Length: 511
Image 1: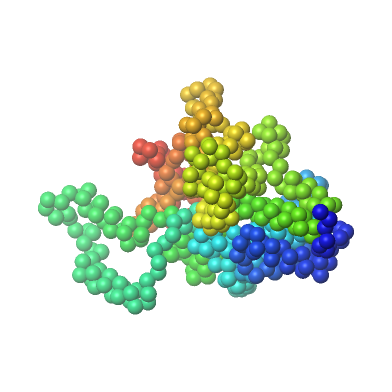
Image 2 (image 1 turned 120 degrees about the vertical axis):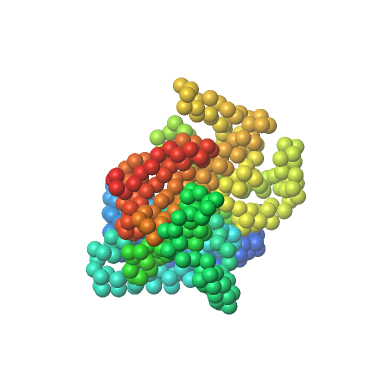
């Protein structure tokens, strides 16, 4: 059947009229074919140097000044100039409106591909995934970054560059431990806060006097019992243990000035903003890749793009989803684009043409045909760990040739622990899902105690999993940064996660 539709574009050169026409067509198709729900889009065409600058500033359009950003810029620029690293075809910001950067060197076919990828795929995922809805404020991030940039600039003018950089250095060093991993309770209303404050003050007046700590314990009550009670009350008042080190230091440090606390708060909010992205890389990139692949093929089937443009798109698409073998020098782990796309295409297959095995493993979706609703639900309600745990199929495990190795320290060789059988599929899926659990892979370090009326030493606890201790040099450097913000001695005890046995303790007095 001959095509009668007019091509959206011809040739490799682009202009803004073509970009606008292609975006309007892709947006309408995304809403029609996939039921996407997106923020308004603001597209900007930038040069390679501007893309390098975006790399260095965490991909944000506005960012305060810090020497680490310049260092990152020079490093990326050197690799790019030498041809050791390419640049992304696009970059997208989780904001409202959603900002999409397009490289000016892209051809028109590539601009169409990355528009579908970023302006539709990533945009939909940012707007609808529950982690981004829960932890980020897309409508307020740009104005907040503008405030952060101007505030830190004013601090540099008033207090000097060196003191500001010292606070930023320490805060940046703690960004990995400066996030809330679990949602806090909802804030109380102002009236409830006043009532709660009044009740707490009355209780403290009736029941607390610091001089009581110096009195001998009452008869029948041991000294250890009295110490344990004081410790319990102290932890309750400080809401310990606390997983967010930056939050605790911001609220409780006795040496920080108000402007320093605000800088720590800025770094903490930015760290929290990026936390969902670390938990959803496979889903986010898989969603965007699935969207661009589906929409580009639909446009080609409707004769809206030429065969030449489609071949160019497929070549770039293949480069994105390329998965090197484990013994390939280019191998650096599982490609999130490839795994995410394969899993989402597999969901479509299971929904429309399931096998008997699929019906056993996925009775809720197999053969129902509503793959769009299944994908929209998955994009909205899952992160990488739960998505792999629920939707990785035995067919895909066989396609990827996945198996599980047991690494026992007492054995000289690896042991193949799980293969392609009923029990093995479940264990492989569970192990792969666990590898995407950010909470399991990051060190679990929490504030457990501080005696504000005594020596003011801050005590941290590292819960050691699978015997993996912290690297000594990085640990000591981090402790020094915590001490800079706390102002007093800091110690960290390592405790085995399974037995609770103490494995060691390190103090800033020793580093």
